[in-house]
Amino acid sequence: MTRLFILLVFISVSFFVNAQSAIGAWETISKSENGDRIKQVAIYANDYYAISTYNITTGKFLKTKGGSWNLMDDTINQKVEFNSDNSELVGSASSFKVSVKENVLEIEGEDLKFNRIDKGEPGALQGAWLMSGRIRNGEIQNRDIDRPRKTMKILSGTRFQWIAYNTETKQFMGTGGGTYTTDNGEYIENIEFFSRDDSKVGASLEFNYELIDGNWHHSGLSSKGDPIHEIWTLRD
Image (cartoon, rainbow, N blue to C red; front, side, top):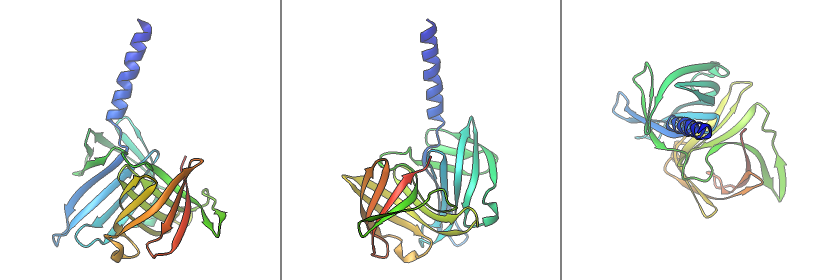
């Protein structure tokens, strides 16, 4: 009887935690003063998050922020690693209460509601990754992922965003994102915003991908048409 009671409690707690999970991608859409549609997309992976805002009508990137996070009961705790709109906030922490239901995330005290895009599926690369190396001329060139200068790519089940930034200087250097798919070793990005070049919006980039010893090997042609072979390591 005692074991059955413990098992039932464990199942109940697990169900509650899963019901409250923010893992995945979320969006909210509003209108600007001139009538353009503005989309805000939040991606929450294990321990890390990124939020991007861009103009759906023109494809113009507006701003992004992100860093580490956790959900304790009904409170999200966040620490900022990058903020394109206000670099002085890098390193700061904040907490706010949320209501996370099946397909809606509401921030308490604000008139802000996000609708769920996915729960971290079906893409095979869900998580937060740091670029840890490149292969050039057959040789691996490793990169220290603990250094302040980082390139992170964060993915839900259907959404991706990459961000280049420096946690020491608080500098934001660029970002891009949109939707992605993984199928039979092929990784396809569909660009919805790109801070460095709006003309890339709407483009689809096809790459080969492979997981080797837990690292993501990513090869193909960059948005500039240059051949690349990158290695990405999942963040702890």
